[in-house]
Image (cartoon, rainbow, N blue to C red; front, side, top):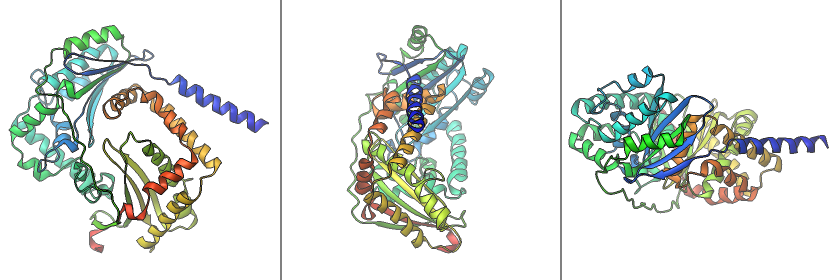
Length: 441
C-alpha cells in the first residue's frame, strides 16, 4: 500500500509540475508578414527578445555552402545606426547577454536584458533586419572568424566530424542539401563576391521569413505598441520564400565507409540511420530509443558494453531531427585491443533485442518519468522558453507544442518502441562507418 501511495503521489507531483509550467502566449502577424509571439512572465525583471529566420544551410546554393552560418556572424558586424563592432558592447553595457546559432533549417538571434531595456533589444533586432551593413571589411573579418571556428570545432577537435555531422551527411544524402555541413566550405566562402552576400541577405532576412519572440517581464499591450513602432514599417525585399522538399531515395543496402581524424587515438564504430522529419511521431519514439540504449550509466548499451563486458570505453547515441529528414547516430569507442567489428556486433545485438522484445514495464516507466522531468525543466527559464516558442512556430508550425509535446511522448507505448526499432534500425538502411586516425588508415 505504501508503494502504491508513493507512486500515486509521484504521479500527481509530476502532473502538477507540468501543469504549473504551462506557457501562455499571444501570437499574431504584422501586415508585413512578421510573426510575433509574446509571453508575459513577471516574476523576474528580465526579458528575452529573439528573432528566428527561416533560413539555414539547406537554403544555400551549390558552390556557396556556409552562407547561413556565415550570416550568423556577419549580422553582428553593425548596422546603419550601430557602429561596427559595438553590438556586444551595447548589450553588455546594459546588463545583458546575446548570441546566435544556425542549423540546417533556421538561424536564431537573441538578446536577454533587464526588462527596462526591452525597447533597446527591439530596436537592435529591427536594425539587424532593416539596416545591416554588409561590406568588404565585415565579410573579410568574419571570414577569418568562421575559419577559426571550423578549426576549433571540427578540424582540430577529436571526433568533431561526427559531432558536427561533416563525416555523415555526405554518405546519407545524395540529393538533399543536408549532405553538406552547416559550417560549409571555406573555399566556397573565399570565392563568394560581396554582391552574393548582399543578395542572400535581401532574399532571406525579411519580416515575412521571420518570427519575433518577446518573453519575460513585459506588458502585452505595451510590447505590441513598441513592436509595431520598430518593425511595422519594415518592407520585404521579395516574396515569401517557398520551398520544394527534395526527396531522397530509400537506403536499401548498407553503406560502408571510412573517415579519418588526425586528432584521435581511439577509433570509433559509427552506425547512422536516416530517419523521418522532426514533426513525424516516429521521431519522438526514436528519442525514447536513444535514451534506452545510451541515456546515461543505466542505459542498455552502457551497462552491457562498458560495465559488464568491458569492450567499450564509451558509448553514445543521438537523434538529430530536422525539418525534412533526421538522422540517428550510434557511436562506440573500443577499450584496449577490442576491434571495431566486435563493437558492431554488440551494438547490433542491442538493436535486435529492442526489435524482438518489448522493454520491461519498469524500464518504460523510468523512461516516461525522465521525459516528464525534461519537459518541466525545458520551460524553466525565459531564454529557453523564447527559443522553444520560436522553434515550434518556425519548424513545427504549431507554437502550442511547447505545452502539448509531452502528450505525444505520453502516448507512446512499448509496442511503438519495438515497431519503430524494426522500421528504421535495420542493417540494410544505414551508414556503417569506421572512424579512424589518419595514421592507422
